[in-house]
Each structure stands twice: as structure tokens, then as C-alpha cells.
Image (cartoon, rainbow, N blue to C red; front, side, top):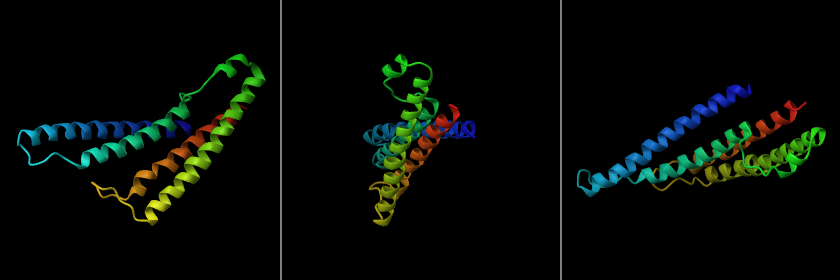
Length: 156
């Protein structure tokens, strides 16, 4: 199941990156075209869309990096430990990751999504509900929790 999630996440990240490149390229191009008088005005929605794509790319990328063990870590202590102590420390770290990701990202992110939908907040330029933008927070939290729990139980 982990490989399937990894493959899906890789494809989604590639798509998001391609969309972001195309979006920013059009943003720059439309500014020059507007400056030269080819079009009446530069695209205004592209800046906001780039921001939203960056949020999604960053959070899903963090989930993917967490699953691959490429996340930021200070590994001075694990390098000094051996055997059972090193395995115990890795489990403790993964338990702390589960607690943080669940409380901050899943619960906190879920509340943020609920609140933005309840207040009917929408983005200024594009006009989409901000809950759609923020829904990636609990989704990436669930992915990080899954990867950490998988690492905990795989260590047996």
C-alpha cells in the first residue's frame, strides 16, 4: 500500500509542479504582452494561483519527503547510538511525529478548513473557497501520520 501511495503522491507532485511552471510562465508573459499593448491587462489570477499551488506543493512535498525519510533531521544522537537504543530512539521520534502531525495538521488543519467553509471565505482574485486551498493541511497530516506509523510498525 505504501508504494501505491508513493506513486500517487509522486504523480500529483509532478502535476502540481507542471501547473505551477505553466502558471508562472503565463504570468510573466502576460505582463510583457500587456506592456507591449498586445493584451489589455496582465493576468491577475495567476499570482494567487501560484501561491495556492506553492502551498499544495510544499505540504504534499513535505509528506512525500517524510515518507522517504528525507525530512530535515538532526542526527547527532542517532549516530552515537547502536542497536536497540537506536531503534528505540527512531520509534520515539516517529511517535512524536505522529502526535504533532495529528494534533497540528489533522485536527488543527481540519478546524481551519471547517472554519473557512463555515465563514464562506473565498480568495480575492480567483474566487474559490479558501477551504479548498487549506484542505491540503489535514490531507498531508494524514499522510505524515500514515508514514510515521508505517515506520514504527515496519521496524519490528
